[in-house]
Length: 310
Ligand SMILES: Nc1ncnc2c1ncn2[C@@H]1O[C@H](COP(=O)(O)OP(=O)(O)O)[C@@H](O)[C@H]1O
Ligand SMILES: [Mg+2]
Image (cartoon, rainbow, N blue to C red; front, side, top):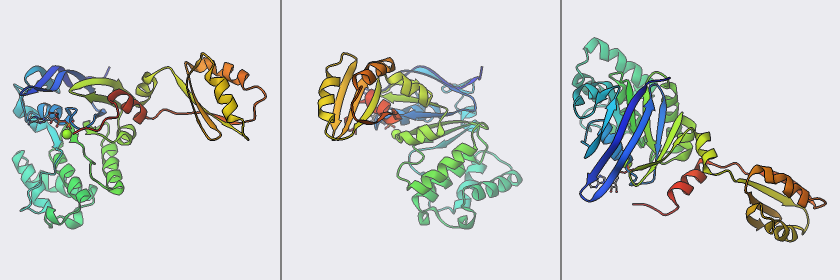
């Protein structure tokens, strides 16, 4: 059994009358990459602020590597790296100086941090720009610099709050590569509203909304969980689609049916019903029957609704 790196129990945060976190229970395994998904305003940043000891909860408790966030703030801050939602770089320091300041704030020895910073600048593709000021960097470069800074003191737990929001696809992929390459050596907790990102990177994914945890599991578990129903697309040759739509639509095992031109999409109660469908289609000019894979996006929308947020 892996040990938990991050644990919360009934964690609650109120902003006046707004409940931003509502009795939140969570466990994140040591060394895993964990993704917290949720629409804007779900409470992701609030959760990260509490876990990184930047803010105190209203009630409940949280611990990082066994240390309580209320009692052991200083020890926790030494052992975590934080990439906040906004790039909080010092614009009057060069890229390298930003990293050096961070190292000094963590009490690192100069010999130690010099080499570490060299490595990180190299790793993040910023070595050539280390003497330049962050304002002259693109969004992707600034983000990489912030990630490098969070890694200087070799944290055991890394928090990334929407690390790739606003980045172009190339920069996003660069960040993904780094996150992947760090897998196993530290626990990574990231928030995102890019489903593809969570799917690509994370061992486990949780979906939260209105301050509550609404689903948790691997990508596959979340997809399976959505429902037992199975969706098939049947493609007809010629003009037969209409007639068969009526026929299939009258069958009790068909939960839902839609037709678009020669293609009919049927949702079945369970996959065992497929044989009934095939029997009913006997003699029909069927060109193809294919299973429609559910995407994480289907899961997300079905759990959080399709209304636009904040
Ligand atoms: N400092 C604050 N004061 C009052 N309300 C806040 C504050 N920070 C966040 N909120 C509200 O709390 C809810 C959760 O916000 P947040 O944690 O930032 O969500 P997310 O990061 O998922 O977008 C939102 O409704 C937001 O408007
Ligand atoms: Mg946020």
